[in-house]
Amino acid sequence: MSLPYTVFEAMAVAISHELNDHENWFIGLATGDATIQILSRVPIVGMCLAQLTHAPNSFMAVAGWVMNPVVSEIPTTMETEFGTALQFWRCESRATGYLAARGECDVGFGSAAQIDKYGNCNIVCIGDYLRPRIRLIGPINQPGHFSLFKREVIIVDHEKRNFVDKVDFISGVGYLDGPGAREKAGLTRGGPCLVLTDKCLFDFDPVTKQVRLRSLHPGVTLEEVKANTGFTHNWIPDRVPETPGPTSEELRLIREVIDPRAVLIPRS
Image (cartoon, rainbow, N blue to C red; front, side):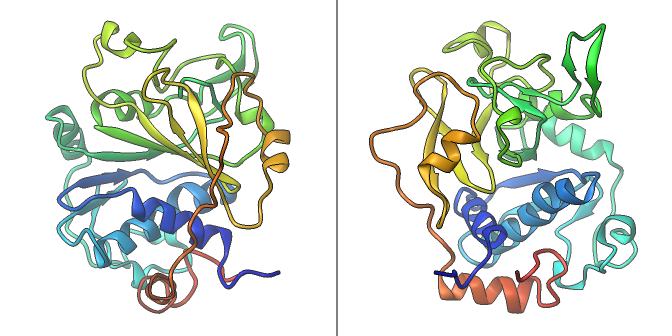
């Protein structure tokens, strides 16, 4: 049975439900069509949906220099023309760094080529650092996201190679090797709170600090997720609910107010 909404719309709604009023949210821009879709466009829709529903006093920063953009006016070449075609307040990118250092960035959004069972992320290399099989994009601002922001939402394509027991290099510090490890390393705040994929939603066990399955997106089976996940610890609870899809009002806001031209999220 076909659903009246897309997986990207369901992901945007899942993001919006995790955001609170009176918060500051930050997202950087991505590279590559697939990553741009999942890591830039979907979260922007989710943040806007939260602002229009339950979080009107929140604040969104995109790439550190676009503040509370009017997303309905985003051009089709969003990533290259973002700053010239929107109504926004402009500031120096380092201002976001000041906010983060003061603990005023509540939520960040990031991605990874590898994520392990404790939420550690890797965007530096696959294999040994000195002789890697693959050299990735590099840490960029990921260390700051995972050490200075109050919590991080990780968004990644659901492929088995992305989910490992131990990452090859830590560029984003999750819970390292278990409870108390962040604090021992001097990280007094922050850390990942969710892992969102195109198949499911993960969160973290508050006791073990290990990734656990929270819900399956509509139309996705548990076997499908298991076949595409490389964790070996017990990450599947006894009962796995379905990720709530958008309500009729949320879908209306996405399609008629936030993204009326389907620039951010395709309709199919």
